[in-house]
Amino acid sequence: MFAHINHDFRMPTVFRFGVGAFATLAKEIETIGAKKVAIVSDKGLEKVGVVQRVVELIEPLSVPTVTYTNIAGEPTFELLRDAVETLQAEKCDLIIGIGGGSALDVAKATAALCGKDDISSYLSGAKTIESRSVKCILLPTTSGTGSEVTLNAIFGDEEQQVKRGLVSPAFLPDAAIIDPELTISCPARVTAASGVDAFTHAIESYIAIKSTPLTKVYSEKAMKLFTSNITKAVHNGNDLEARMGMSWVSSLAGVALANAGVGAVHALAYPLGGTFHIEHGVANALLMPFVFEVIGKTCTEEMIEVASFLQLGDYKSRPHQALKAVVAYMYQLLEDLDLPTSLSELGIDEGSLPMLAEQAAKIDRLLSNTPYKLNEQKILGIYQSAFNGREGN
Image (cartoon, rainbow, N blue to C red; front, side, top):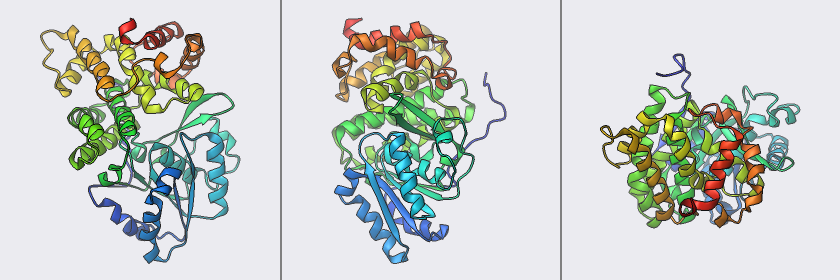
């Protein structure tokens, strides 16, 4: 039974994928007819010369460029305000985002907010950004957030000490250019955390209340490719086939997320990022098995299917063992990818768990898309289990 019969399906107008796709950026800029280009990226990519490669690619077009690379770590609303003010003053008509989810989120949100009055009302969520006047092209250098194809952008709210997602149709770029070669230099830890983030998008969108037969096709393909490629991409970063597989996982799961949404894992991960600055992918990866142990009870049919996608076996004749197999796979994933396995390992004190549960319980946009009713008490129980770790429960 699928909840939405009439369902808009959203993707970027141009979606270009493949080794060497980066070189097509110049053609895309020409097609758009840009008069002045801003390149939004982070300090790390500027240091290793990736930003310079973009500048050199644009040079033959004789289009003026400016760069904004103030991003270090996960972005805040304060940083977004600064980016909007800076690039609005430069009067750029095209913003190119290149980097991980942080750089892409800043790029697309800045493009959407340039030219808007009183951006505070948009940042608070009081108003939705319906349209944008500045063009936008996104090029991911990690395989995880799928930000290049989603309507979401995540920012830290420093005043409230929480992470919040802005959602807008204006966040879809005019072009998404995915070149797996750009992910080769991605470190193992980032590859692991961002890769499991993409898997979280795939599995959460698959069981989401807003899922449809079409979104499930994307989620399914992402999960199948994930299990074949993640370990190779993490432990042998130069394996271009594995990198290509993970680039597909990120984009396919991103499309599923953009159209079906995610749920409880993300809802519980946001307070960890907002209060303790735990990277988003790490928070998702760690919480996922503990969340699914609880919410998976209402998704027996889907768990049988997911077990099959992940090559864990055929559970049709023993349906209630499928969830156990999927959760065991999630635990094993943390071990295999050298990711943390408990909240205590991340230095989070047990006394802060009730505060985290209180914050997570307010994220109704995501909790209401989960096919299991979670209240604050149940959320606290999940955090407690995650604090103790698998062995401690």
